[in-house]
Image (cartoon, rainbow, N blue to C red; front, side):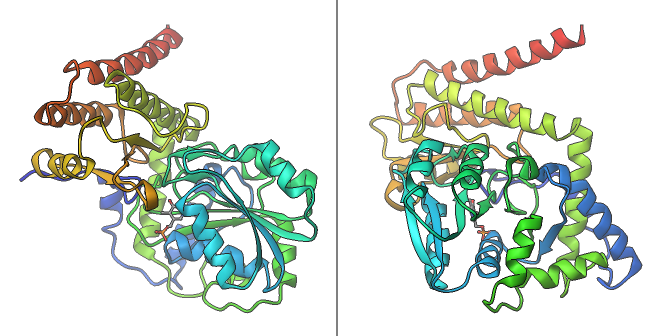
Length: 391
Ligand SMILES: *Cc1c(COP(=O)(O)O)cnc(C)c1O
């Protein structure tokens, strides 16, 4: 009877209107109807990336898009820098190593961000760096790297391309690809984009196209030049995930309906603040400081004295609330509260309230209602600001 309340950092819930839009009859991807859908969708999604460049649609998960960015720009033996602050930065390292790139790894402790100063010092002694790979939002720790500053450092210190994995935040975090000088920006469908898994979005700068054209490394299904040339015709080289593109079109409409992308970003900020204040009020520690905290996912330490695995399965079985556990060495130490995409203040109030119920079941020492109250205070303050601006 009860529906699972999915509060993961991806996959995430799908809005009803998007589900309905995806119920569309399948059309041929070589039809005029598809070209119209494709072109409209690409125009609508550009503000979410902050770009005037084309956005390519790959029929794939986010990992394939990361791989595409790597294999299209760099050849075996060339130097790259990979900034890794967690499990998803390590993905980039693995991809680059598999393709035989010479990887210079800038590694930070999990739970920390990479600062502009650290990147500058790391880059200064290096030479002939072809690309710098960086995760914008580290999904394993809930860290948002200061990507605008990092991209600027890459520009100032090197001729390298700045390639950004935005899979778990594009759609919920600010993105000014062109203004920040990002060369390739990537996201996937099932995180903040409110869609099922299976579609990835890649945008490429003019500078990066030049590098890609000259790159010798072969690729076929992930060849971005072939996506690029088909995009001019309003199509993709192979059969695309038509259903998900109908969904993406509707997602963009919903963002417009919310009042534009800035409003969507502001909502994510609010959700983040609600969660963080609630956990503080419950005396439950957070993995990261406020400064670099992600607007789309919060990593939360196990409540003191509680076995985390038992707590999470109890929450799911008893209250249908589904959080994600920790990855790698943080497994059993943290859980991850996803608040991206189709998520609203009411969802946070609900999740915190159910968490409190479970905390009582585990006889955790706290004032019942304290977390909900704290979240509600943050929500009300934001509402009152809005009311004040209306007046
Ligand atoms: C989820 C995620 C990926 C991988 O995406 P898949 O669709 O699972 O292939 C890559 N990077 C980040 C930051 C992610 O959150």
